[in-house]
Length: 505
Image 1 (cartoon, rainbow, N blue to C red):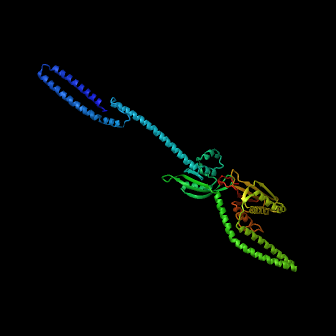
Image 2 (cartoon, one colour):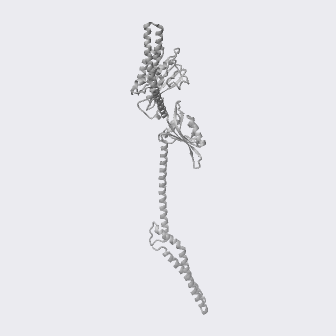
Image 3 (cartoon, rainbow, N blue to C red):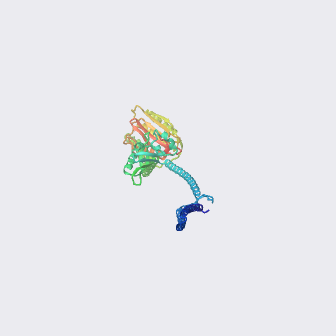
């Protein structure tokens, strides 16, 4: 198909015919007027000839002008024909072809626009999924994460941090679904109120926001609603923009209470082992020397009986008594210094406490002291003989702490187990109604040879601590005042669970 030929031909013919008819009419009019005049006829003939020539020349100029004017249009049409989705036909004009091509291109443009919208929606959903995944990834970190903006407002908290700091918050129940689905929580509260249970955290975040100070691997304490103190490992770093302006603070934290307890327990075991190795040799030599002195004193005592020397026999009996006391002290110290070889079996704490109470019953009855056993006692993996020594020492110390003139003479041994679906520790508390331990002595009572008794040697509680630590437990003074003292023993149960999920007594 040759584009534009028909229209151009029509245009040229129309102009030519009109021009020819006009000139012909003018020539005839002049010829009629000049009829009979030879000179005038000749002028009209010349004029007619020049008009014809001018008409031809004008038509040529018009043709060239038209070609020059429609050249861009023709070029556009040709180029459009090459890429046009429309197939032209000989009966179709250029304008019809251009209009149809334009309509087709508009339709294709609309189709591409819809496709682009679909791609944009798909990309938006993909970005939203990626954002939700990143948010849940942060929310489910095994460490607590808290972000604070430059105004000091807490903007986001993951579930782990919420469990640590807002366990007793009234809004926790409302936030439980979000915490279970792994979403970040935005409480929008002041960081001083959020971290009210840990003044050290408040100070660090304040310093980070004001001075851009970074804190790495700091250990801070925080207090639970029930008064128990836990230990946190904390890192606080500033959040800065491209111009290094502080936009907020990022806090990462982990509850390391059990790790710290294990570290202190290992350190204590190491110290006890070093002390035992150092003292075992000296104690053995003292025991040998005391055995020799004991033999010589017995010989002197036999000689005094033979000579019937009463004064000498009395003196020698007192000497033998002191020698026996020193021998008992050395024996206890050797038991303390000797490495404990545990023979672990499943033991019932209630049976052990009952056996200790039965053993001490005569002495307690003679002193007018009542002993009560109550609570829930669990079975734990332990060495029965060593655990009997632990509770015998604690109950004997409780009896010795009660004054003979006291109006209330009572020892209470109570048992308990961690609450929750997966308990971790069994607890035994030995309480008395004695005079209590002074605050200045509380930090020294488990040190060997430290004692407040006139006839004591300070080995009993040190041996109790060593045995309990050897069982991966711990012992402490839970309460000591004018109303009496309470020793708290904690022993691990047979099953081991995640300590972060436990509510420890």
